[in-house]
Amino acid sequence: MSSRPIIPHSAAPTIGVFDSGFGGLTVLRALVARLPHAHFAFIGDTARLPYGSKSRRTIARYAVESAQFLVREQGAEFLVIACNTASALALDAIQAAVPVPVLGVIEPGAANARASSRTGDVLVVATDATVHSHAYAAACSALGLRALEKACPLLVPLVEEGWTNHPVTDQVIRIYLDELLAEAASQDLKPDTLVLGCTHYPLLRPLIERAVPAGMKVIDSAESAADAAVLLINGKNETISDSTALSGGASRVSPTAKVRCFATDSVEKFERLGSRFLGRPVGNVELVDLGG
Ligand code: DGL
Image 1: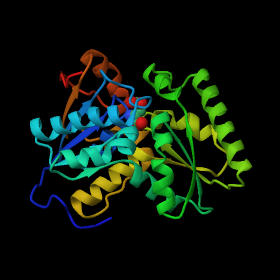
Image 2 (image 1 turned 135 degrees about the vertical axis):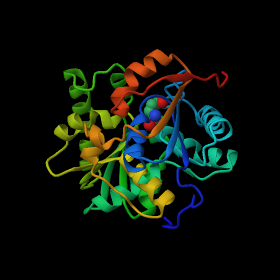
Image 3 (image 1 turned 60 degrees about the vertical axis):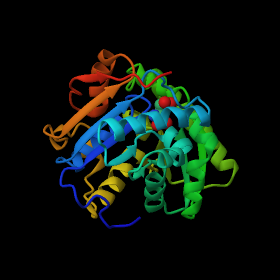
C-alpha cells in the first residue's frame, strides 16, 4: 500500500464511513481515536440490515446508494466501507460509483493476518455472503496465506440483541469455533490466527479470545482498516493498541472529533445501541431515506 498521502490538501478531511448497521461504528471508533481532527459522516443502513444474507446484486445496490449519499450530500473526500459484507461483494461497484478513494476492510484484515501468522494458515469468521464470496480467501492467498472461512450467521443477531456477554452467545461461539477447528484439522492446516471478518464481531472479542486455542491470535478487521485508512490519509502509520481503542479506552476516543451519524431506520434505536459500538454517545442521529 502506498505511503503517499492521498488527501494532502485537507488538514481536516471529511471521511465517510458506511455500514449496513451499527457494527461499523467499531471501525468509526478506531478511526476517531487515530484521526481526532478529521470530520466523520457515518451512515448505517439499518432499514435494510442484514446484508450478510443477501445477494451480491442487492448488496451492491444498497452500498452504492449509501456511498453516494456520503460523497454527494456529506462531502466525503474519502470513504471507508466499514462492512465486511459490502467490502467483499460491492467494493468494485462502489469504487466505480464515486469519484473519491474507497477503502474496504478485507485487504487490511488479510494484511494484518499475514503480519500475525507464523504458520501461514489462518481462520476467518464472517457472514454467509462474505464467506461465499471467498473474498478473504482470495486476499489471504494473494499474500501467501491459506485461509479457511466459516459463516457464523447467528452472531450478528446476538450482538444486535445486546447479548455480547451472554452464556448463549458463548456457547454459540464455541460450537462454531469447534466446527471450524475440526475442519482445519481435517485439511491438515495449522492455523495460528483468527480474523474477525464481520464488523459486529469485535463486540464479541472477549468471548472469542476465551474460546480459541491458547496462543491463537485474534485479528480485528476494524482495527486493521483504521490503520490502513490513517496510512492512506496521513502517509504515515499512527497505530494505537487494539485494547486501548476498542476495549473501553474511552479517554483515547476523542470526545471532540466531529461525528455526524445517519441511519435509514429508527434513530432512537441507533442512539441507544450505537453508543455500545462507538464507545461514547452517538449524539443526535439523523434519519435518511435512501429508497427501497
Ligand atoms: N456489517 C456486516 C458485516 O460486517 C454485518 C451485518 C450484516 O449482515 O449486515 O459483514
